[in-house]
Amino acid sequence: MPLKGFIRNIKPLEVLTEEQVEAIHRSTLDVLETTGIRFESEKVLKIFNKNGCNVDFENNRVRFPSYIVEEALRKCPSSFTMKSRNPKNNIRIGGNTVYFSDMPGMRILDLDTFKTRPATRQENKDAVIVLDALENIHILCSYTPYFEVEGIPPLMAIPESFAAKIRNSSKVSWEGYQNNCEIFIIEMAKVVDQDVMGLGLPSAPLTYYTDACESAIRIAKAGFPINIASGCIMGGTSPATIAGTLVTFDAEVIGGIVLVQMVNPGTRVVVEDTILPMNMQSGHPLFGSINTCLHITAFAQVWRKYEVPTFADSGWTNSKKIDFQDGYERSMTAFACALSGCHVSNLYGGVYGELAYHPVQAILDDDIAGMIGRFIEGVEISDETLATNLIEEVGPIPGYYLNTEHTRRFYKDIFKPKAADMSTYTDWFEKGQKDCIKLAEERMHEILKTHKVFPIPDDQEKEVEKILNKARKYYIKKDED
Image (cartoon, rainbow, N blue to C red; front, side, top):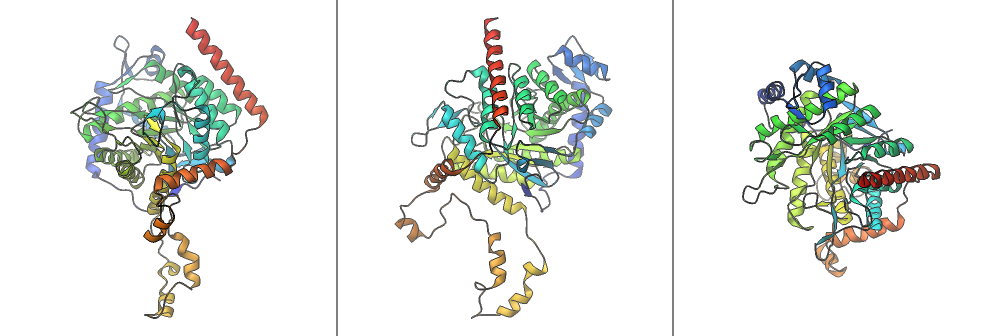
């Protein structure tokens, strides 16, 4: 039985007409067939050539006939299960279910100075344990919690990160790639008998480099699901308009979908929206922009047409610390993601793009996810909830509902955040005037004292360590060569 997640019982938010969705679709097909995608891999060019695409080997350009594109999209499952090493944490992506994930952070954030530094191994472990304990997060994302950890060489960052997630959580994972490290990720996932969501990322505009191609092929051949995401910057690496960026984004990710469906038909695919506008005054991305919310909503609407599961980045914020700006920017994008029908939203823990992370932020985000999840579950209308007989029984004043069996049954329907201060002003003042950050810190320490992680068997632990040692030797030899 997979994790329930949140069931969206309300109609998905739409910002496009049917005609506009069709216009984006036709424009995407035109770009794929006329402009094409650049693939920096002779192996991939040969795969496309063998399967009927128009391949320009001299310029590494592949042009896709429409029928090949539409056939590849049809081969993508509209929903699928991901297996965890603990069956109770299996998930089923698709349909009306919304899951939440964490947001990567390069370094740990100091809550006193809001400066960043590399995390220690213990801090990385603790951050994973907190994510394992939080009830509204269902998936651990790639490159998380921290990508820069003391004592871990950059070449080993991804394998060590995945091993830390295996050892300290039993929730399913996404994982990244660099310098062939997906080889070791696949081996570790098979040892602990769980699925891992691999990555195959185009580089905007309209290009796949060799490492992305190799990762996509390896993940597809291993039978694991793959996340294909484009990181366009509107006005920089894609058109400045939401519509134009949708076209280039769709073309880029569809190029990867066609590849993995040729390698292994039926490969499980999630398409991820990582679009950001550019700040034209400084050149840096505008994290937490309302334009991102609009793009997510339009993206989800278009991909419902293709019936391919979707994932949107919703934890990005421009704020450099945990404050009001941080809260409203991440809440807006996470809400847009869930309302628009995306199946996964990565929200937890990240501060200022992907540059910083802290478990306290993740604990606060668990409340945001819970609130959003409760909203999309909608309003139940039944004889019991309408309560007309009870209303007749209680009548006007001096009647009241506090002592009724109906209230005892249904009061739990009111969502209560766990890190927010919900006391009266007087009580708050008398109990030390703690804000949500302090309350989240206290909850973090309590989790680390009490939470028990689903154990990894000793034989699997030994095999994971063997694979890590093999990876270390591989990169030492590669560096020497």
